[in-house]
Length: 216
Image 1: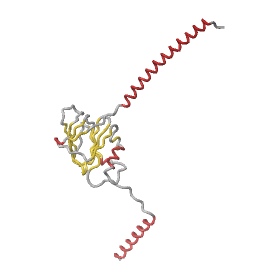
Image 2 (image 1 turned 180 degrees about the horizontal axis):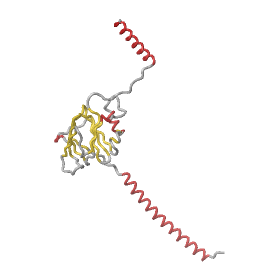
Image 3 (image 1 turned 30 degrees about the vertical axis):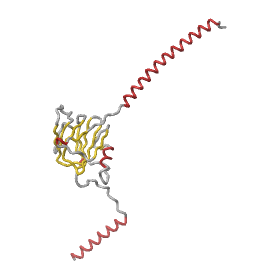
Image 4 (image 1 turned 90 degrees about the vertical axis):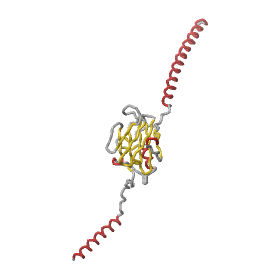
């Protein structure tokens, strides 16, 4: 049988152990909560979208419409970003399902290409220009400015041969999409029904008969 004094000592020890465990648990919880708050704060930090401002003082022409995508590539491995494709299709009829390679023109700054002129208008070191003008031999309806994690697309009704802009990040590359001019969208061929094919065959036979009569 346990005496009162022994029971009191055991109760005191148990209380101390419980407090110690609670104290340690509390510190661990506090540290865990702190780390979670930090992680959530980092992930919840707003992503700064790229800004591209037209510069009329150096020949810039304001776009008809603008698309801003905070994160994503405009064109990757020949595939157009879905947001960019949707933006293009909002002005094209019928819609594009894909953009052909001949309808895209991409230049990684500071590289140059035939039919393309780039002029830095600031003192930024090579590859980090934020104020520049450009020109192309072919007029394009959509010009895309890629910098940082996202891009900005400009739509120019009727097409543009160039412009000048000021950006808040150094330019990575420029993409020119959809040359201006007649629609280049080619709808899929509509298969003829069987009756249509028979009619074409009959017409072909008739034309052969007429030719034979003329030569007879």
